[in-house]
Image (cartoon, rainbow, N blue to C red; front, side, top):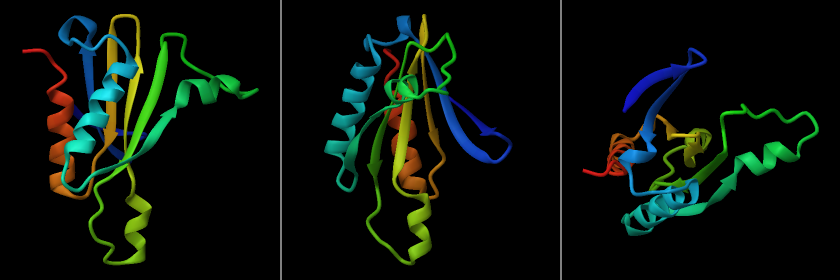
Length: 130
């Protein structure tokens, strides 16, 4: 898993997962996996799944890289406190999953909560078959 800055300001984690490195066969398989992890977590709650590919494909000026075959986000929240109204700007969380010909690209924005970040990283790395 790599950490980088997207557009020189967004701290993100990215994992390129070869299709031969996981038992998951599709974006939907990976999204379902995350749903199970979120449901099992004592604090996290699933909000929904956003089909980013389908949405963008319907827009008259929508543009999708031809290498991308599918792209979805699972949207969820780890928030167990609201200490001030500004914290809402960084919630909820989302993990994006894109399918390419031979791999999946999984990405998420770094969470300010270390425990949430650790959970997302652990879940993502566990997608690799041992």
